[in-house]
Length: 147
Image (cartoon, rainbow, N blue to C red):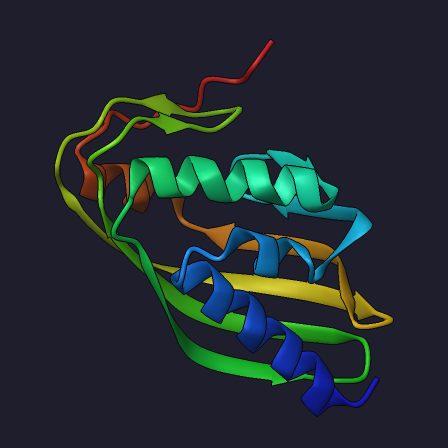
């Protein structure tokens, strides 16, 4: 696919996330997609896994927003840098991190690398600094791995 088409897919994904339009967002995810949070090692698969990841994020940060700061692509991949913001008012329930809300604000940079085939996201690698994130949230840092 042309690079501009891939950029549009990722922009549409982020717009859907910002507007809490989960069905619209999951329609962009391939059934066999693999979404890896590199910092935690958590892996989510397909639209169902993406839905789980998004819902847990929205539960912890109901006012979350994503601001794209840099975006570039080629015919197969997209790299996007962005700032994730929100207020920690609900429980955080990721496979590797469990934390209770502190009411503190979060503003942390992320970088995602997507592979796109046939107009669908087939893989994502999400990079962020978990120690900084937990510090901003006032949560002791230490990943609790799911058994």
